[in-house]
Amino acid sequence: MLSSKLINTGILRNTTRISVTQWSKSFSTSIISGNQYADFIPANAEQEQFLTRQTEKPLFSRKTYLIDFYKHLYDNNEILLFVHHNNLNKSDNKRYRQELFKSGANLHVIKSSMFKLLLRSINEADPAQKGMSAKNKDKVHDLDPLLAGPTAIITIPKSDPQVVTSVMKVLKSANERLLLIGAKIENNVMNLDEINQFKTLPTKESLQGQLVGLLTMAGGAGLVRTLETPGKVLYLNLDQRKKDMEGPKQEEKTENKE
Image 1 (cartoon, rainbow, N blue to C red):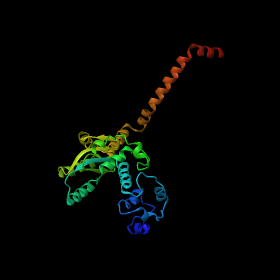
Image 2: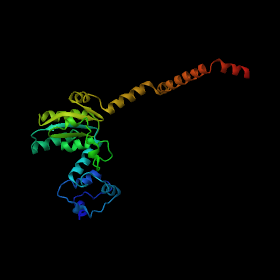
Image 3: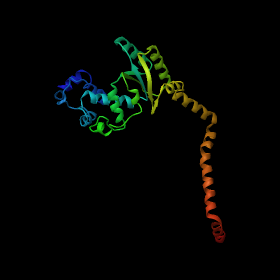
Image 4: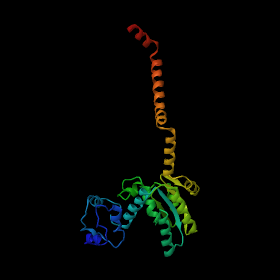
């Protein structure tokens, strides 16, 4: 049974903590046919929901897996560095992966056509869903020009300029085996000049520390006064405007009552 195979490989040993991406990875090769997972019994609600998906390609096909995996990389990394890989032998591939991992990044060789397919439907809840390819076939993503030729992406979970600096040192040592061509940093697509500018920026933690220092120097009472001032000014202006609009008639009514 397929469930036994997954348990033996460790895929389902801790089903309460496994992600859909990890689980579906076990079906990423073409040797698994529909009959092999027909008797599979889902172990939790996440797996039950996964089995109900109506996908463009068969649920456990390699194409569906790649779409899911690329979306996982896209959604869970604030920085994606796009590189061309040239003449990477097995030893080079292993060495650069290890060096990038030490820098806080991961290297993934991607299939450009499948990544483009994902990008067309990147704003959909499920890009692999049946009908998404036809619905978004004419869409062009800003990252499309970076997906020409043999492409890999270097993923960095957090938007950290220091990690980008370390990664670029590794790429420099690789000469033209790994050639940086562009990036997606948070929601921005950047060229090489913009990446070089980004890597010189302080980290978010450093900026937050500087802000805390400035607020501390301003003092608690001073900060409260600063925050309250715009509201007080707005209230006084609106109150005066109200009096101007009411005009002398309102003043006469007040005097008559007295």
